[in-house]
Length: 361
Image 1 (spheres, rainbow, N blue to C red):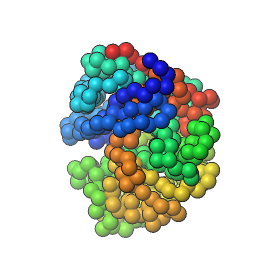
Image 2 (cartoon, rainbow, N blue to C red):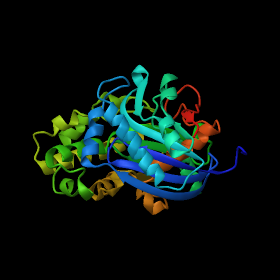
Image 3 (cartoon, helix red, strand yellow):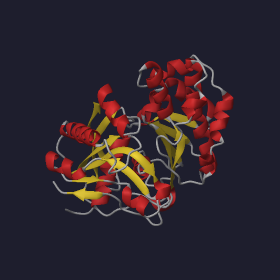
């Protein structure tokens, strides 16, 4: 196979929001995006979500992971089988714990198992080597965001923000190579505290369209208290675990439901506003991906608070539900061809690194 020949890859992504598995096909040579293919979404049931929650914070060898591992394998296989067979699969797995400061990260999922049952070679365990070499292991989508900016034929700097359980931002200058034109970092808590609050309080997965938050009033003192966290003083690149800001729920415990939702939403906005201190230059646009872009109140507040055009990535010609799945399809091809998947400016690793394990079909 020619090194620069485009191939079809399937990416599988289950994020920290624990909503389901995204699966997407992508035609790429590992540098440029040639074509977007079929995609699908495999939602977790309430029972499956609780099984996943039972594994959060656990490490390999901890008790009680057998049911979680079986669920992760089965649901990802089901998602992969809904798409046409591809030359390669990128399998992220389910992040249960992330502690790069102590050199460890845990994405549950057996790529060799998936390769055997799907009949396709699988690249997986994308983050471990980066962490072992001193990187944060996250975020990994930035190099794909660079490819998106090239696909859109942009020339000015751009910020792409994924609002999943945790917020992560990529600053891209598409006129530069990725080694010098990309900076990435986690911005702070995003949907995870709000979703957890909605689940604990109402049994709902999220605040639909931000309706509850829109009916309340944010507590500015609590927002300011969160921004005093040492994390916001650290230089980029930097990354977070889903539960690093779990204490936020205690801060809003005495508020009424609407004010609590408004405060948790305002925290997301404030974290993004604080991120500008770390960017080399102000981007002309900010594209929002992930579930957060569907929260109308959140998007309204972002446009109101930030000094540039804030866009739903769907309006820019991309499928915002599938950006992360597409990213892992793209990363799989880069790994298979020995191209870097993380950089000093994206994860803090010492040198550009091609991370991930490849299991043959």
